[in-house]
Image 1 (tube, one colour):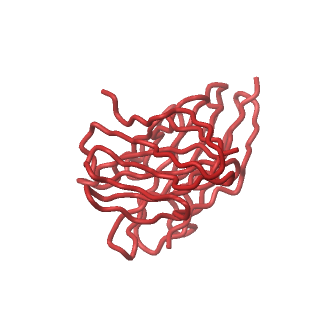
Image 2 (cartoon, rainbow over the protein chains, first blue to last red):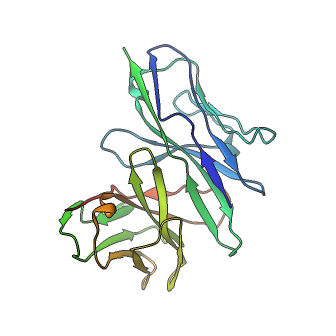
Length: 112
Length: 114
């Protein structure tokens, strides 16, 4: 079974403060991990994927296989970062099919 | 490009009524998914499909049925709606012709069962 845990439902920070959105996963193989973001009244969209090791809108995420974590970080939060963030894992099921499993999401509020 | 389109966007049903949600994608993706989004529970997978004519159960399949008669369409049916099915439903599609591909989402369907 594969599972994604996001322990924080809400994270509220002030503009310019550092942000870390936590994500832990459970999967027996090599996971494909993603962060998706949902801005107000918009559809979910991909923010970044672990394989790319890229920085998108100032956000980065590092896969830590020892801790089974994929935390999302940004050094200086902006008001436009306020949104719902979902961590997701794509892994093979016993059925030979690949499922995309999401965490429960963390709402980030950046206050002025 | 249209991407992933869901119809309808909003619907109110009475308990016991039936309805079908339609998801259409124009990207020739093999995989399609139906999720429901509830406060505090995130996105939970209802059913998914790995190709035309195939479907599989996800995490919360009870009370729902699906069909994928054409590659571009994935239908989600509620035979007898219950208030517990009040939720926002999202469809997504994805290709798996290479690793780590992005899932594309529809705009969501807000369903209220009274």
